[in-house]
Length: 116
Image (cartoon, rainbow, N blue to C red; front, side, top):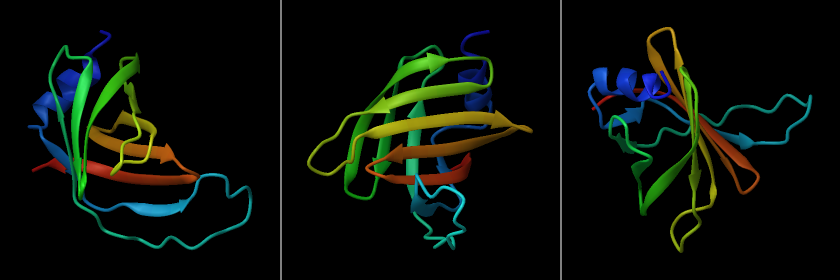
């Protein structure tokens, strides 16, 4: 079931977007840093059996490339562009919901995705 997560995401009715995102340094160690809780609208379009995902995030429009897939986790590479910071996007199926995590440029963004 290599693409079980894509199937699950399809059942959620894609495109999907996070309800909230937080920004904090990716390498914060054990120091507790406050979450800024910056809401942001971002959408991803995944196609069952596909190896790419379309991303629209404010002025950043990009194509992510699937680099790893398990039954519950999809990992994508995001190329850097003039409007997009290069990074890694991970979608994880947790309790019937799709968790989102982006890391890159010394930052990370997380959210729970829902259908649009």
